[in-house]
Structures are given as C-alpha cells and as structure tokens.
Length: 211
Image (cartoon, rainbow, N blue to C red; front, side):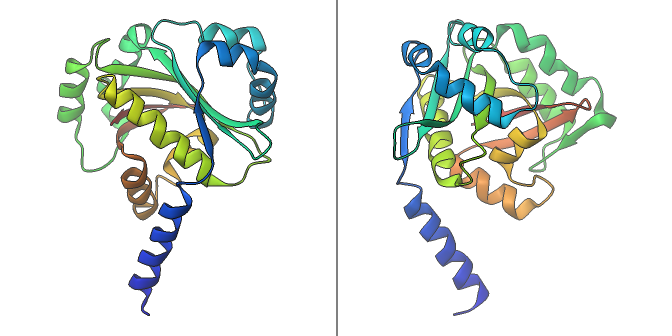
C-alpha cells in the first residue's frame, strides 16, 4: 500500500469516526440550564474567559443558533454559537480597506472579497460569536461533527457568509494550521466551508468564511 492509499484510508477512517460522538443543538433554554458546563469549558479554553452573564446575554441575541458536543457522561466539552450579524457588518468591511494586512486563501482576491461584502446582509450572513473546546477534550471527532451540524443548520437557514472574530487557538480548531494548505483543504472539505480572507489585529483573527 503506497502513501496515497494510506492517506485515503486514514481519511476514510476519520470520516467513519466522525459519525460517532454526541452533538446536540444548544438552544437558549439549554444554554441557561447548562451554564456551569459552558463556563467550565470557557475557563479551560481561554486565559481571559467571559463571565457567565456575558455568555447568557449572547444566547438571548436575535437569531441565536448554537451547538454543543458532549462526552460519554453528558457533560458539555465544546460549543459553538452565534447570532444576527447586523452589528458586525461594518467590522467586516475592514477586510476590504487594508489589503496589505489581509491574508487571502483558496485563490480568492480582494476584488472577490469586495463583491462578497457588498452582497452580505442580515438574511445571508451570520456572526460566529464564540467557539471553545475543553482542554480535557483533545479529540477532534466531536468538535468536527459539531461544526458539520452547525454549518448545515446555518445553510438550511439561508446563511451563505460567516463573520468570525476568533483567537488563534480557536481558529486552529476549525482550520488546523491555515499555513499548511493540505490540512486546510482537508478541513474545508470535511466541514463544508471555505476560508476567504482573514486579518489579524494582534489579538484575534477577523475572518470571512463561505459555507
């Protein structure tokens, strides 16, 4: 068996494993009921975690949609959520104002990014507010399945574009190492998204993603 066959076999096995794991929609009521779990994940994932009241406020925003991954004991070990992007529309325009600071992916150009930004509205755009995974959960399988479920839900709701302002570790959960095109391509194909562009401000990556 050559290297190509081994790589394909590995991807097949990962795809099969991706069907395992417990992933559920994290609606506003469940969010409130399980806030202790969510705060625990937040505290493990970030050096400056958001307080519980701030997280709960997110879950009550217009257009809120969220998903969570659970371990075999039913504890939440990862989550992703967001809401209506109307307040972030001006923020994403930064991508079109500072071309020398923007990194483009998948052969996208500034002109194409400008067209996408001009098409974005509250009906087809979603703001990903938070994404975290417990450090006790090194397993990417549940995180991967959670992303697939999340993106599929958004697509069914008519969402085409995502605005995501994520920290480095958070972005790595989705992209792997974005500097490695092979890893990025596998992640994009598996999860059903394409990274268009990202700009780094020293603390977080503001990214435009299509699904």
